[in-house]
Amino acid sequence: MWGSNHNHAPEFQTIDGQTLLDRLYTRTTAAVDAELDTAWMFAGGRDPVAYIRRYAGRVPQVHVKDYSNATKYVIEIGKGELDFPVAKPRVGPREVHHVGGIALTGKD
Image 1 (cartoon, rainbow, N blue to C red):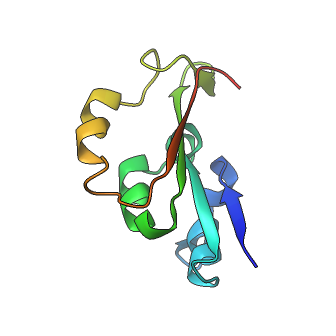
Image 2 (spheres, one colour; image 1 turned 30 degrees about the vertical axis):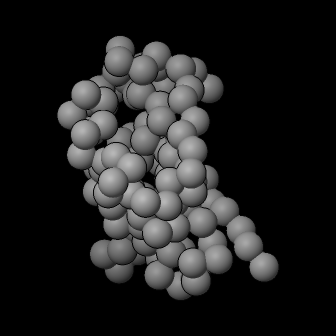
């Protein structure tokens, strides 16, 4: 059996010092993929690059979105708070070997 989880900001709340997202992935096997969403990781106060690295073997797809602190919502890539020029070389195909796709989203 296989499944996938697409995160939103609430999954970064903590219980006993561990985020809900980390609790999910530490309590399941690699049969549960992580479709990590950059905007909602950022909105949840987390570093998208660090999470992509942490779960690289379970990330078949990254949902790349930007986020605005002013509107508290998704915004056109490059117009929000995320630093994509810095993140792009830090997380690339040589480092995250299991990423099969990237979904780019301007607005939800």
